[in-house]
Structure formats: structure tokens, C-alpha cells
Length: 253
Length: 251
Figure 1: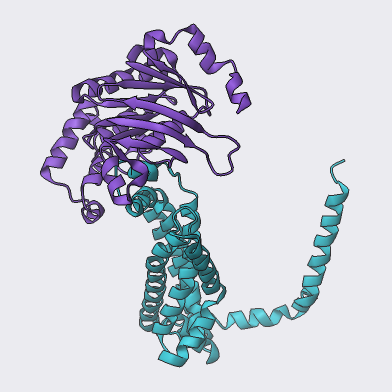
Figure 2: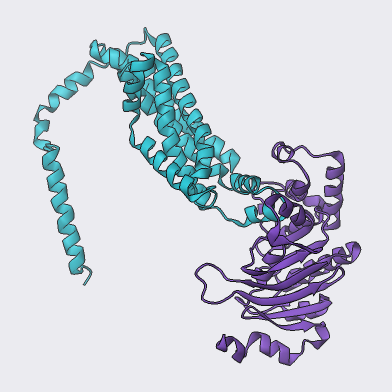
């Protein structure tokens, strides 16, 4: 379904690759957590999957089509099937919960319809249903900047779910939330994941959460995959390798 | 202890420039020995002459209309240009630099020069004054709004790209809600400035209360001048109050 084929990314002016030669195959039903220190390439990896970040070498294949060969218009049709949530939520300020969730339909509609804000009865019904799913019905007409962090992230999830996604990406979605809220967000993500049989890929700093929810863990270090396997296999030793010791290999590079 | 040598040099330079500027501007308080003249002059302003009040109010309305139309058209034109003149939304770096330079160029021309040039083409009246205000405001608001755009959080735009919106639309939708209150704030300030500018443009035949003020002055009708000035003050204060009300409602 999604094949990450030997990708490398180097930022302009960067001294080394932010991602180097990453190979991963992902299928629907996978709940993948990406672990790694800050600067290990987690965010870069996630952002390559929906083309927010261009790869320097290699390609991301989505149902056997390479993202890097797509024109802007085709990239948009790929992106609308990939929901994404962010660390800082990235909601549109000054709009209500309902308005923010409705922006999830933008990839499927004409720019004119988006601009005037004309939504079909079906779209409105679905948006309300999804807002009920994330338990925000009582906040539906509040402006998003008045919400708590956990509520904001649930708006983000609702916006992404309205896209009818096949893939769900999370770029450190719980890094600015407290542990209890993080757990509830992950539970919600898992519920959505199972209900729609998604491919879910999430960056996370909290190893406990990853082991609790993931069906597969990928650990990155200095832009390279150093672990890819079942959560049970991610032991103390892998933890240490991911977060502490410096590998000889990167020094040689 | 508090003053390093660098500070002392800066202060001496500052003092030098103060004296130099005073010299050039013939700044001399002893000239106020004829202060009595000014009091005599101002005493002629009172009592105010209310006989022409209806005409004055009509002219004030014209002034308000000039300032509003000029600054608002300026805002309408400046908004799309400012997206081209902002580094993060410019379609190309060539267009970015071109629009930046164009905005600076327009901004550097005072309204009165625009007014004098336009007079030759379309004659006297409020129309050239309105256009002059519009042109200058395109330059000023274009610069201010493009700076607001550059200071926005890129997160919402990124989210809009991620849902599959077109990138131009994603920029618009991600940025406008963020900058809107500040745009209004800048706009109302420029509206207020435009009122004062339209007075000056009245001096060169731009119509409105400014022209009436100028004509009353030239014909020594100081009791009317007093009322003109009072009306101008009231207008500026009202616009300021309305502006802050609107801004508070938007934020």
C-alpha cells in the first residue's frame, strides 16, 4: 500500500542527511509508532509520506505511484486520502470547531465552493457525526483558540477523519499534552484506526504509549532506521540504542 | 560606571545634531516676544460663526467619504499585492522583489504630489484627492500587510495543504484569519490619517472641509475657521472611537 523506497532528505545548508536511505513497507492495519530523539528524522519521515517534504533521493510509492513524479493536482488527490494531525494542532484560528472540521473536505471540493463556504447537507451531516465521535458536540460552535490542548487535538482528529483517510499521520500529536490526555488521544486514534482499518503512522516521544498502542515500532537514529519490528521486541537494549549511545556507523558517515 | 566611552560619544553626537537641527530650523524661543500677536489673532476666532454650519457638515461628509473611499480602495488593492510582496507567499522571488520595490516607490510619493499630478488630468475636486489617498495607501498598507503575512504561524497553511487544498488557497485560508484583526487595526489607523491628509489635499482644491478651512482662512473669516477646526477634531475623534469598537468586536 505504502512503500518508502530508499529515501534520503537533506535540508538546504544541512551538514548531513536528515533521513538517509530509509526503506519501509507499510500496509493497512498497521499502527506504527516512530521513536527517536529530537532531530533523528521522525518529523521529516512523516512529512515525506504526504509530500509536505520533498525527498532528495529515493521515492515514496503510494499504491505503486511515486509521489515525486506527481503534478501538484495529483498530489492533492493523494493528500486528501492521508489525514494528518500535528504537535501544535495547526487549526485555523478564529474559526469554530465546526468550521475547522469542515475544512477536512477541502481536498474533495472546488476552490470556489471552499471560498464561499458552501457545504452539502451530506458533508454537514458527516462533520456533525465525526464531531460527536470525538465527543465535542457541546463545543461545536466555540472558537478553537478557547479550547484546551486535548480538545484542540480532537478537533484535529475530526478534521482528518472527515477526509475519509486511508492513512493517518501524526507528527508528535501528544508532545504538548499531559500524560492522561495523551492516553485518551491515543485511545481515540486506536478506535478510529480499528473502525476504518487505517494505516496509522505516529511520531511519539513516549515509549510506553508506543508499546501500549502500536502494532509495529520503527526507531530512527540520525536519520537511519535502527529498529523495525514488533513492540515486544523493542527492549531495554533498543531503547538505550535509540536514545543514548552514539552508533559508530554515523560517525564514519 | 554607568557610562562607557561609546555612550559618551553617542550622547555628544546626539547633542551636536540637536543644536545643528535647531540652527537649521531657526528654532529660537526668544522669538515668542511677540506672543501677544498670537493671542490677538486667536481672539478673533471667537465667538464662532455658526451661520455656515449646514454647508460645513456637508463638506465634512465629503471629507469622510474621500478618506473612507480612498483608504478602502487602497486596502482592496493592497491585500492581493501584499501576498506577492511577502516572502513566504510570493509566487517567485522575482515578483517578490519587484512588488517590494514598487510598493516602496508608491509609498515614497506624498499624497499631495499625487494630487497635484492628478489635478492636471482630471481637474479640481474630491475625485483626484480620493485617488491620491488610494495610491499612497496601496504603498503603505501593502508593506504593513505583507509584514503581517511574513509573521504568521505556518502551521495552519501546512494543515490546509495536508487536507489536499490547492496551495494558493491553503495560503489564503491559513493566513487571512490570523492577520485579520491586525489588518483592520492598520486600516483604521490609515483611515484616520487619510482624514488629516484630505484636509491638506483640500488646500490644493481637493474639496471637503479642508478646502473650506483653507478658503475661510484666506478670506480672514476666522470665526468660521474656528468652527472648521472644531469639526475636524470631532471627526477624527469619532473615527478613532468607531475604529476601536470595530476592532474589539473582531478580536
